[in-house]
Image 1 (tube, rainbow, N blue to C red):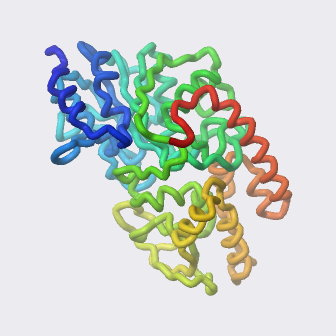
Image 2: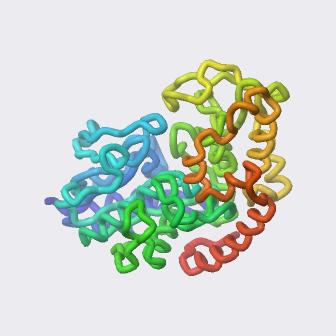
Length: 411
């Protein structure tokens, strides 16, 4: 195996405009390339693992590493696939990356956790995926399962950290692991946690949250040999926008910012605009007569089976509210009134007498972290008291996470 070509890569990195510019962990080659020399490397990544270039087109990390002499033996693709081009929920197949010839193992198909056989010939694993800071966004669950697999096989894991575009937002119910633990909810953290994946990886290690798969009984003795390469020049209160859309149905910075406020609607009869050009910026359903906006979801490359496909939906734009929330400084709390407004609008329709607004209750509980919110919305609990409970949970979480934070709150 030829040695890693450090000098050309480091000279190129030195040319990057770092002053005041956010630099993701994967662009800090001098921090992790020496660890890869003469190693068989696996990498968990998708289309967001792109190295910024001072000139020309940005290059995917796998292509960059191979050109630098790194022996990339295998790649692992999360939801939406290794190249990030699969629609929501589509199982990704195993295969060979046509660009590099590297074998690609799907972590959103037959298995969601790397198997011992898939890791057998690897000396180290890299993780480089852009997250959006919401507990039910599946890249976090993939990270935890990769950590468990690496810990079980005694393989070091290097997380190349990236900013959280919703780092300012910490709110919502904490997942009750004794009630619901699934691929859309793994850790006992708030729905919107305000942390990076690197910080959460360290927290999962430190709090003994690894092991047990989807069960509620992790193995506190299981520890991953973890290294986190921090990003630079990012602060938690910055309204940072990811340069590449993290997934097909979050195509814009605004959709990423609205995602934590709207994601629970996925388990209701309401549409969040999947099957339109601008998902997660508007909401509605057929028969919502008072809505000032209409839209018709249709199958597209990002959403094969959108809710209410081919039907005209009345509703309203949440994008218009986002600027007001930001101006008022109230976008640092989950805006549950959107959920409440749609629930009331549904109850005012003829269909509201026949069908429940939360039409997938188990999925709603998995997304929200337990049955409490659903029961409150259905009139079986105190919503205000529940929000007060979230405030106490948030305070405990903020104290717990303080030892794992790597980035300042403000400049």
